Length: 125
Image (tube, helix red, strand yellow):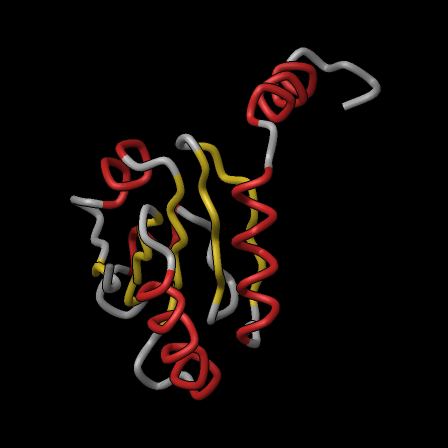
């Protein structure tokens, strides 16, 4: 599956309707973004069942602001509609592969439990 361009209109539905979504926040003027783009695109071709989305922060300023994007490129990973990873900086291909493996391996019941404990003010969370 190739990458898909995400907009304010399509972002939430894409994140909620797919099991795993990786989002690359980028801009045309950003050198590291241009270096990361082929790595992200290559991964999208080899990982069927994962949605790879790209958000042009220049065209989607409101969306980038709502997501709290402060630096680009930023990579976010969502699983079952839950943000499980967010980090600025371009990843090399091996690190992106490692991240994809880690997101696939997450125990989402445990993630939901941790989120519920944090929301309830549990001191362990």
